[in-house]
Image (cartoon, rainbow, N blue to C red; front, side):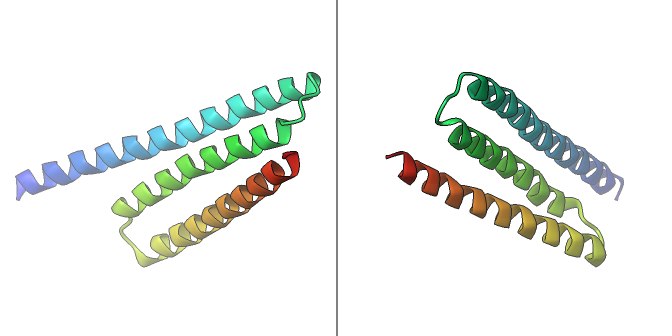
Length: 109
């Protein structure tokens, strides 16, 4: 029984560090994209909206990956319901941003 508790503890740590890694990568991508977009605005780049939308979409996908990992360590139904709502909202945002990217790419052609 002790061995199972140790394995579970190690598994939870690995998942928690994985969540932290995914969330941090998402934040770093978003900050990098924001700085790049601000620079693009100053240079009057026509593609700045597209660049920003792509960066936000990629960032959201990493954040969504972190939320999916979080489902592995959820213990209660109320936590799972909240997590499900967050996943649905982030998924909807990602879908809308991808739609905006396609629209923006079509308008640039």
